[in-house]
Image (tube, rainbow, N blue to C red; front, top):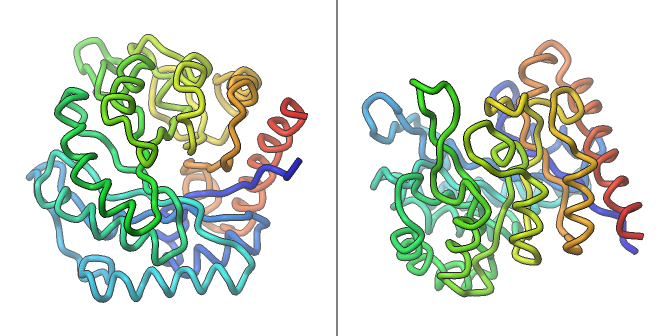
Length: 292
């Protein structure tokens, strides 16, 4: 049995060293792959509800594709590859939604096989299906799959999360099955699935979605907030989540999506990445033992 590969998003480290250097640092830390964070493509102002232009190469198609190729080559220099990407969000913003075909192109240029595209939090499965159906011909032409992700809204009065698109297993399943296309798959965000108020859990969501699960976002929380903490430091039961992944025969990567390095290792990013890599490998090895 092939050993499960480990990956991490590059956006956190990029905030200190840039995207290209962050890819190289993941390779040097021992990761097998990297998750292409494309948030610089569509920076979003949550106060005005508009896209912000900052002069980043990812903002324009020609320079974006050249930049994606540059990142792919940075990975090749250190022996790692792009396993997946994360498109800019929120897609409720028309200016951001217009960027999604470019996000798919950049995913392919970087060598990625899956692009995570959030559903619109406040749209139904039927309404979100229209967006995914529009994008799937582009994805198929590029040899890239689209992954929907389980999301959340926040109820300030109750001080906990409340439902959004794909936030519970049945709604997530409806989103994927309504489109009914093998190129639309599921990315289960372990932390989102464990937030207070959503009435679900990572193991139950994984089992319900089954073989539709082709990607992960892995991080820990206090079963209340979207903490994006290092696994095994808060309250999520990762043994149960790994058992569910083994039960469905999950054969994708363990992809970390935590801000641990940026929060606790600003002065020594390399050390933070080493710890992050060791944690990812612990999860991957645990999954492999369950699948053996």
